[in-house]
Image (tube, helix red, strand yellow):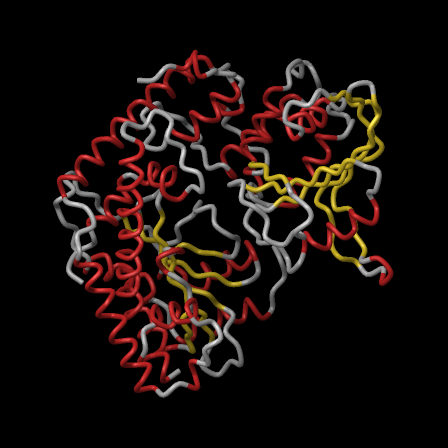
Length: 310
Length: 202
């Protein structure tokens, strides 16, 4: 504690990054203090240097303001085309009502229910749309779904101890170019939590043992589409943002008369609000119009030629 | 530290653009005028802003650490402030064997504000308990959308000047951050530590 109070924490943190194996506690305090002093001087010197002139900073600000105005105009145009019952316009967030808007298990159990053939009346339309999105335009036709479950227990092989649980597992068969293919989809969702130690590599081990002769789709679902850290080097996990998932579901047509239509709307409103951070009331002069424009372009099928600039 | 850095203020003023052009792995420049030149400048501005933020948070840390050192056992979490924009400490009662309470300060880009906060294990129930223990002595900022178990202690707005040349005084902001934690006493830390010890997930 004595050393902690004499040496700056920023210095110790940086030292830890540059030299992670250094035994800081074992170094002479006088040496550390001198090094800390030199570090502070170097930092202060670098701060005093003007990285770009004030004139350039003002010019940069002008460029960014122009860009923002352009996107605000696009946002206004797209909002005018958006149907009144679109989830983006919704006021009710399904899980927000319970303060569970970012609760992973609430989302994954609901997702499994939505993807499965249940009382919502969607059949497997959402599952098929998601598979097509993940397959990036490949023309598959879903012919059989054997299972869609949440929290599927994964064992470690011979030891039979639990290595974890897939948030969602689905499997079945699809037809592509006249050929029947067995498929398996696993989704690992993370909202606020980080991956457990070796979490995805343990899932990869299980998949290699249990899903031979099967096309496996591994999906890492997060708010920002980040790459996973714990998968095995041989296995690629496809990243998927929640906003992309919302867009995929939003594209599925003909659900208006099904029993689950409004449930899905409220669910998607919650995803857009609580996970993607979109405001409850969207104003065309939003200071942050970019991701909203991206989302609206995708759900309204706006092409580059149709879009124009400025 | 007399005033906040100009580049930090620029970052806060153009947060949405910095997120898209600086923070993103692959910047999206669709429709951006002079994209190559802008991206070069954005990199310089972003890197410098990060250093200015770290400097400012270090300044905030001094008072917080001094207060909690007097009433508790406190340990600074070693993190890279330039990356996280988050000041972080573990806190526990002086006689405890471990520290179960986390306190800190974040700079929230959406709110353009400093958020002092306290966290302890136990989810929503722990939040409610902490608010009850502190009574009216803290501001309780709701709807931050943060990890459950976190209580926001204030929302200290960072004023953004109309002209980039203008400065923003640093001391009043630092004083407000310190004030947000000043209400905590040795007894409060013991009581909050008790929530973490007798936890049940809410």
